[in-house]
Amino acid sequence: MKKIVLFGSNGQVGWELQRSLPLLGDFAACDRSKVDLADFDAVSAYLRQERPDIIVNAAAYNAVELAETYEQDAERINFLLVKVLAEYAAENNAWLVHYSTDYVFNGASDIPYDETDLPDPLNAYGRSKALGEVAVAASGCNHLLLRTSWIYSSRGRNFAKTILNLAATKTEFSVVSDQTGAPTCASFIADTTVLCLYRILNSADTQSLSGTYHLVSSGYASWYEYASYLVTEALSLGIPLNCTEKDIRPVSGSEYPTKAVRPISSRLNNSKIQNAFNIIIPDWKTYIKRTLSDIARQG
Ligand SMILES: NC(=O)c1ccc[n+]([C@@H]2O[C@H](COP(=O)([O-])OP(=O)(O)OC[C@H]3O[C@@H](n4cnc5c(N)ncnc54)[C@H](OP(=O)(O)O)[C@@H]3O)[C@@H](O)[C@H]2O)c1
Image 1 (cartoon, rainbow, N blue to C red):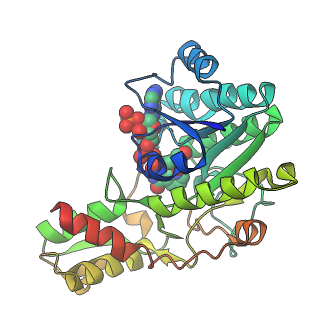
Image 2 (cartoon, rainbow, N blue to C red; image 1 turned 60 degrees about the vertical axis):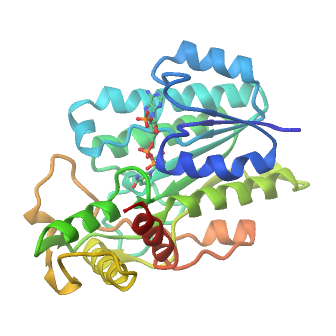
């Protein structure tokens, strides 16, 4: 039986992974209360104790604005920790599943980025995640490096929950309309990760599946289109709001200056993972209804 260790089990994706990773073997979830991932001696000791065949790293330093000021903190988790995990995996013939981001790209492309496009991050968070990607490749370990984008879930902090909160408390508000990407549900990311691992564990040629993949919903939207859809669907589910989509004003990103520069296009081409694992990835709207129902139930 395979031993699977999950880091970051309290995060949006990590929480969802806890539901389905146990299907694959002997499972251990690790959150901050067990190991501070900034303490690499503690991480190495935990790995030696658990001896995983599969490491799933859903932990990250995700504070995009703070990373501009505390880039070394972001690098410690998004780069140096990943190096420790990848080198352990390489030395112990384990698989590493690691998540990266659309923010490794500069967002200037007119067409969706595919896995052969070269990273060129615009901000400190993106730079730290790009370094993590390099560390995984350099270690030579078997890996699934899954780039994703615009994650939401009924847990944690995310754009979808912010919009619902604004729509419940304001009579109008503005949302950026000139940045596009694919809103992607944490439970979809978790379920697809487990499906890919299942295929790998049952494949005659596992190593050919090792690599980088874009794991995002199909289709694209601007933040404004995404917010409008959320509000419309929430109202149709009976979630009480103060606004309709007509009360949302589209604005340019330049009207919202932030420390961290954001890519204009976060569009990632997800064909490679669909073809390699023989799966069909639904449109970004598909999972939103379910998440809204969860949020409605939580009140
Ligand atoms: N969120 C997005 O929109 C987005 C977009 C593209 C890619 N990604 C990538 O997708 C992956 C999953 O993202 P997510 O949104 O699920 O992340 P998340 O909700 O921010 O969760 C990250 C987890 O990492 C844990 N963590 C961070 N530093 C730690 C430390 N020193 N010790 C122990 N645990 C630590 C956090 O623990 P605590 O809960 O204790 O703080 C948290 O549970 C990440 O690799 C992220 O970079 C995210």
